Amino acid sequence: MRTPIIAPSILAADFANLQKEIEMLNLSQADWIHLDIMDGLFVPNISFGMPVCKAIRKHAKKPLDFHLMIEKPERYVKEFKDLGASVISVHLEACPHLHRNIQQIKSLGCKAGVAINPHTAVSLLEPIIQEIDLVCLMSVNPGFGGQMFIESTFAKVKALKELIESKKAQTLIEVDGGVNSGNAKDLVQAGADVLVAGNFVFNAPNPHQVIEDLKQLA
Ligand code: DX5
Ligand code: ZN
Image 1 (cartoon, rainbow, N blue to C red):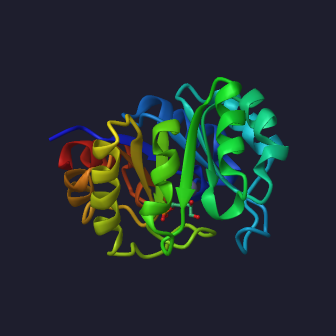
Image 2: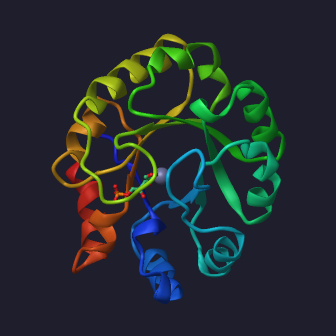
Protein backbone atom coordinates (compact mmCIF):
# COMPACT_ATOMS: atom_id res chain seq x y z
CA MET A 1 0.00 0.00 0.00
CA ARG A 2 1.03 3.64 -0.50
CA THR A 3 2.83 5.37 2.37
CA PRO A 4 0.77 8.35 3.54
CA ILE A 5 2.10 11.83 4.16
CA ILE A 6 1.85 12.45 7.91
CA ALA A 7 1.04 16.00 9.01
CA PRO A 8 0.98 16.40 12.81
CA SER A 9 -1.31 19.23 13.90
CA ILE A 10 0.51 21.71 16.10
CA LEU A 11 -2.81 22.64 17.78
CA ALA A 12 -2.25 19.68 20.12
CA ALA A 13 1.35 20.65 20.96
CA ASP A 14 2.53 22.08 24.27
CA PHE A 15 2.53 25.80 23.41
CA ALA A 16 4.77 26.61 26.36
CA ASN A 17 7.43 24.38 24.76
CA LEU A 18 6.83 25.10 21.11
CA GLN A 19 10.48 25.07 20.07
CA LYS A 20 10.96 21.66 21.65
CA GLU A 21 7.82 20.32 19.97
CA ILE A 22 8.90 21.57 16.52
CA GLU A 23 12.38 20.14 16.98
CA MET A 24 10.78 16.83 17.91
CA LEU A 25 8.85 16.91 14.60
CA ASN A 26 12.00 17.90 12.68
CA LEU A 27 13.70 14.74 13.89
CA SER A 28 10.67 12.54 13.30
CA GLN A 29 9.30 10.93 10.14
CA ALA A 30 6.56 13.56 9.93
CA ASP A 31 6.33 14.97 6.40
CA TRP A 32 4.46 18.22 6.93
CA ILE A 33 3.45 20.40 9.88
CA HIS A 34 -0.28 21.23 9.98
CA LEU A 35 -1.25 24.68 11.32
CA ASP A 36 -4.89 25.25 12.29
CA ILE A 37 -5.88 28.92 12.05
CA MET A 38 -9.27 29.70 13.65
CA ASP A 39 -10.94 33.09 13.78
CA GLY A 40 -13.79 32.64 16.26
CA LEU A 41 -16.28 33.40 13.46
CA PHE A 42 -16.17 30.63 10.90
CA VAL A 43 -15.53 28.23 13.79
CA PRO A 44 -16.43 28.75 17.46
CA ASN A 45 -12.82 28.91 18.64
CA ILE A 46 -9.68 31.01 18.25
CA SER A 47 -6.37 29.15 17.89
CA PHE A 48 -3.27 31.23 17.23
CA GLY A 49 -2.15 33.97 14.88
CA MET A 50 0.80 35.44 13.06
CA PRO A 51 3.34 35.81 15.91
CA VAL A 52 2.98 32.14 16.80
CA CYS A 53 3.24 31.12 13.13
CA LYS A 54 6.41 33.18 12.90
CA ALA A 55 7.87 31.40 15.91
CA ILE A 56 6.98 28.02 14.40
CA ARG A 57 8.53 28.93 11.09
CA LYS A 58 11.78 29.92 12.77
CA HIS A 59 12.36 26.33 13.90
CA ALA A 60 10.41 24.18 11.42
CA LYS A 61 12.37 22.22 8.84
CA LYS A 62 9.32 20.63 7.19
CA PRO A 63 6.72 22.08 4.80
CA LEU A 64 4.01 24.09 6.54
CA ASP A 65 0.42 23.09 5.76
CA PHE A 66 -1.95 25.93 6.70
CA HIS A 67 -5.61 25.08 7.34
CA LEU A 68 -7.53 28.36 7.38
CA MET A 69 -10.79 28.06 9.30
CA ILE A 70 -11.49 31.75 8.80
CA GLU A 71 -13.92 34.01 7.00
CA LYS A 72 -12.64 36.05 4.05
CA PRO A 73 -9.30 34.20 3.93
CA GLU A 74 -8.17 36.35 0.98
CA ARG A 75 -7.29 39.05 3.55
CA TYR A 76 -4.44 36.97 4.98
CA VAL A 77 -3.29 34.52 2.31
CA LYS A 78 -0.28 36.65 1.30
CA GLU A 79 0.77 36.94 4.94
CA PHE A 80 0.61 33.17 5.39
CA LYS A 81 2.68 32.70 2.25
CA ASP A 82 5.27 35.10 3.73
CA LEU A 83 5.17 33.05 6.93
CA GLY A 84 6.42 30.06 4.97
CA ALA A 85 3.25 28.28 3.83
CA SER A 86 3.73 25.47 1.30
CA VAL A 87 0.05 24.50 1.31
CA ILE A 88 -2.86 26.83 2.06
CA SER A 89 -6.36 25.39 2.41
CA VAL A 90 -9.48 27.51 2.62
CA HIS A 91 -12.97 26.28 3.50
CA LEU A 92 -15.51 25.89 0.73
CA GLU A 93 -18.22 26.97 3.19
CA ALA A 94 -16.39 30.26 3.90
CA CYS A 95 -15.72 31.22 0.28
CA PRO A 96 -18.50 32.42 -2.02
CA HIS A 97 -15.82 33.08 -4.66
CA LEU A 98 -13.83 29.91 -4.14
CA HIS A 99 -12.30 29.85 -7.61
CA ARG A 100 -10.82 33.29 -7.00
CA ASN A 101 -9.40 32.15 -3.66
CA ILE A 102 -7.71 29.22 -5.38
CA GLN A 103 -6.26 31.47 -8.07
CA GLN A 104 -4.89 33.80 -5.40
CA ILE A 105 -3.16 30.98 -3.50
CA LYS A 106 -1.66 29.52 -6.67
CA SER A 107 -0.50 32.90 -7.93
CA LEU A 108 1.60 33.19 -4.78
CA GLY A 109 3.32 29.89 -5.56
CA CYS A 110 1.63 27.82 -2.84
CA LYS A 111 -0.28 24.59 -3.24
CA ALA A 112 -4.01 25.34 -3.09
CA GLY A 113 -6.27 23.26 -0.89
CA VAL A 114 -10.01 23.26 -0.26
CA ALA A 115 -11.36 21.98 3.05
CA ILE A 116 -14.92 20.72 3.41
CA ASN A 117 -16.98 20.17 6.55
CA PRO A 118 -18.45 16.76 7.41
CA HIS A 119 -21.89 17.73 6.06
CA THR A 120 -20.61 19.10 2.74
CA ALA A 121 -20.98 16.84 -0.30
CA VAL A 122 -17.87 15.84 -2.19
CA SER A 123 -19.78 16.39 -5.47
CA LEU A 124 -19.62 20.17 -4.87
CA LEU A 125 -15.91 19.95 -5.72
CA GLU A 126 -16.57 18.55 -9.19
CA PRO A 127 -16.27 21.87 -11.07
CA ILE A 128 -12.93 22.78 -9.49
CA ILE A 129 -11.23 19.48 -8.71
CA GLN A 130 -8.72 19.88 -11.56
CA GLU A 131 -7.68 23.29 -10.26
CA ILE A 132 -6.79 22.26 -6.74
CA ASP A 133 -3.76 20.48 -5.31
CA LEU A 134 -5.44 19.11 -2.19
CA VAL A 135 -8.84 18.48 -0.63
CA CYS A 136 -8.94 18.50 3.16
CA LEU A 137 -11.84 16.28 4.21
CA MET A 138 -12.89 17.19 7.72
CA SER A 139 -13.54 14.05 9.74
CA VAL A 140 -14.68 16.11 12.75
CA ASN A 141 -16.52 19.41 12.93
CA PRO A 142 -13.76 22.03 12.64
CA GLY A 143 -12.91 24.16 15.64
CA PHE A 144 -11.36 21.82 18.17
CA GLY A 145 -8.75 19.10 18.42
CA GLY A 146 -9.34 15.83 20.24
CA GLN A 147 -12.80 15.03 18.85
CA MET A 148 -14.12 11.67 17.75
CA PHE A 149 -13.64 10.58 14.15
CA ILE A 150 -16.86 10.65 12.08
CA GLU A 151 -17.22 7.24 10.42
CA SER A 152 -19.02 8.48 7.29
CA THR A 153 -15.66 9.98 6.25
CA PHE A 154 -14.62 6.63 4.74
CA ALA A 155 -17.41 6.85 2.14
CA LYS A 156 -16.44 10.45 1.37
CA VAL A 157 -12.80 9.50 0.83
CA LYS A 158 -13.91 6.81 -1.64
CA ALA A 159 -16.29 9.16 -3.48
CA LEU A 160 -13.59 11.82 -3.71
CA LYS A 161 -11.03 9.32 -4.98
CA GLU A 162 -13.47 8.29 -7.72
CA LEU A 163 -14.08 11.91 -8.67
CA ILE A 164 -10.33 12.63 -8.84
CA GLU A 165 -9.67 9.57 -10.99
CA SER A 166 -12.62 10.21 -13.29
CA LYS A 167 -11.29 13.72 -13.95
CA LYS A 168 -7.68 12.52 -14.26
CA ALA A 169 -6.73 15.07 -11.60
CA GLN A 170 -3.65 14.89 -9.35
CA THR A 171 -5.39 16.24 -6.24
CA LEU A 172 -4.24 14.87 -2.89
CA ILE A 173 -6.82 13.73 -0.32
CA GLU A 174 -6.08 14.89 3.23
CA VAL A 175 -8.13 13.63 6.18
CA ASP A 176 -8.25 15.87 9.25
CA GLY A 177 -9.68 15.12 12.69
CA GLY A 178 -9.66 12.15 15.04
CA VAL A 179 -7.10 10.21 13.03
CA ASN A 180 -5.45 7.37 14.95
CA SER A 181 -4.07 3.86 14.54
CA GLY A 182 -7.64 2.50 14.49
CA ASN A 183 -8.65 4.28 11.27
CA ALA A 184 -5.40 5.21 9.48
CA LYS A 185 -5.05 1.99 7.51
CA ASP A 186 -8.64 2.01 6.27
CA LEU A 187 -8.35 5.68 5.33
CA VAL A 188 -5.28 5.06 3.18
CA GLN A 189 -6.93 2.01 1.65
CA ALA A 190 -9.97 4.16 0.79
CA GLY A 191 -7.69 6.67 -0.99
CA ALA A 192 -6.31 9.12 1.59
CA ASP A 193 -2.86 10.55 0.79
CA VAL A 194 -2.31 12.84 3.79
CA LEU A 195 -3.22 12.09 7.41
CA VAL A 196 -3.41 14.95 9.90
CA ALA A 197 -3.07 13.86 13.52
CA GLY A 198 -3.04 16.13 16.56
CA ASN A 199 -3.79 14.55 19.90
CA PHE A 200 -2.85 11.07 18.75
CA VAL A 201 0.72 12.28 18.12
CA PHE A 202 1.30 14.88 20.82
CA ASN A 203 -0.38 13.02 23.68
CA ALA A 204 1.56 9.85 23.01
CA PRO A 205 4.42 8.87 25.32
CA ASN A 206 6.58 8.42 22.22
CA PRO A 207 5.41 10.70 19.37
CA HIS A 208 8.22 9.55 17.04
CA GLN A 209 7.00 5.98 17.31
CA VAL A 210 3.38 7.01 16.74
CA ILE A 211 4.30 8.91 13.57
CA GLU A 212 6.34 5.96 12.32
CA ASP A 213 3.48 3.58 13.12
CA LEU A 214 0.96 5.73 11.23
CA LYS A 215 3.19 5.50 8.18
CA GLN A 216 3.79 1.77 8.45
CA LEU A 217 0.24 0.83 9.41
CA ALA A 218 -1.07 1.87 6.08
C1 DX5 B 1 -9.88 20.67 13.82
C2 DX5 B 1 -8.51 20.83 13.21
C3 DX5 B 1 -7.69 19.57 13.20
C4 DX5 B 1 -7.29 19.12 14.60
C5 DX5 B 1 -6.85 17.69 14.54
O1 DX5 B 1 -10.59 21.85 13.67
O2 DX5 B 1 -8.63 21.24 11.88
O3 DX5 B 1 -6.53 19.74 12.41
O4 DX5 B 1 -6.26 19.90 15.12
O5 DX5 B 1 -6.64 17.26 15.85
P1 DX5 B 1 -7.01 15.80 16.35
O6 DX5 B 1 -6.14 14.84 15.56
O7 DX5 B 1 -6.68 15.85 17.78
O8 DX5 B 1 -8.46 15.56 16.06
ZN1 ZN C 1 -6.80 21.14 10.56
